[in-house]
Amino acid sequence: MAIAGVAGLQAESRTFTSPDGRTLQAEILKASPESVTLQLTNGQSIVAPVDKFSSEDQAFIAKWRKENPEVIKYNFSASYKEAKINSIKSFKSDHEIITEAWECTVNLGNRSGETLEGLEVEYTIYFTQISNNQPTLRAVSGTSKLPSLRHLQEESFKTKSVQLVSSKLAAGFYYADGSRARQKDDIEGITLKVKHAGKIAYEWTSQGLTPERIKTARKSQ
Image (cartoon, rainbow, N blue to C red; front, top):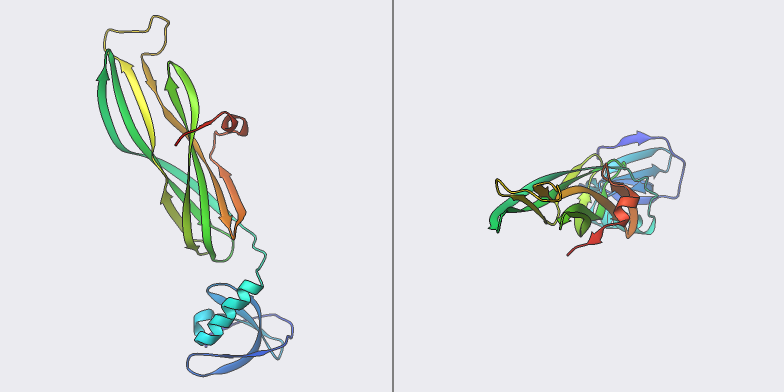
């Protein structure tokens, strides 16, 4: 059973068994999905992979983790990229209209020092929609679930798509009031809310979005 030693205090022990029958007396100090910190009867502490123990011990360790939840110092990294997934061109009177579907790829990294299971990420995409020469900020929300994210692991997921429209006057035409001949919807940014064990562990807002700006958004389906 390959183990690594760390400092510790003496504690009440239990018999742990490896798959090949070797045993040791120890008390659990700390456990994650991958490893467990045990305190031996001589006061020394060791760290060992959970899968180096018998199935009965693995079940005991899993139960101990549930009954002794550790205070996690959550730390994440986040980023996103926009991508066009399709485009349709049409004509209406003296306008050329291009309707595009865009989606975001969100990248989330775990820097919390341990594996996090059952993460739920709530996201909202904010985009400007032009109607009658007037811009309106709209929002589309969704949820993505990450079953497991190891320490220093990064995972990506795709969001719902949003529909962006651009229109421009045909050559030779212009607006009498001086409005631009070309108008285009645009994605302004995204917000994330990461939940773990039913609690908010992390919130992130992309650069350029302000709380005041977000409050003006209208929700879209």
